[in-house]
Image 1 (cartoon, rainbow, N blue to C red):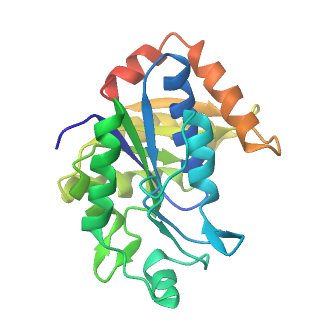
Image 2: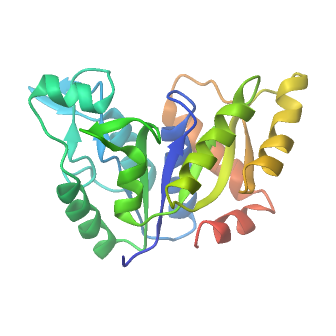
Length: 239
């Protein structure tokens, strides 16, 4: 498939996929790259003037400096449930063909497209189709977002193993939300993840807990822009 991009997935929900995707989008934008973003399926959307709106997609677009459109967020679902269940409640069927058409239109106008999945790879989107199936349909490598701390080694290794079993390339792992004073489990987790996952750890990102998500994105993007290894990370992501 034409175009360059990455599919952001996580070891679980709430690990910081949206912040990670938005931070990468902001980093690319400030470095002069025409970056597009996409959140194909969002559960738990807000309602604004009678229309469901993906808050995740809005943050991604703000970070990338682009306008949110139906191509960016083709499926906005009301309930904060697994997308297949939320879609059923809304009377919607998540159609991979439609998502692919939206993605191809984004690829045609951007040099690089960051796609954020929903939850983890095994989350059902439609019938027996999973988030992993969507990543494969779009032909994109994965960037896995993991949390630090106890349990993350198991979750991350399982995610990478499942991806590889399904024929997906894992470009790397980002450990997101490392506290200033990490405990023993947090200090050791990244080393084990790097040695066991068959994919490099491309970053250990510090914990940011500001109330405003765009402020977190700006701070992380500025921090990344000052790291000497960021050039290597971007190369691993196909840039």
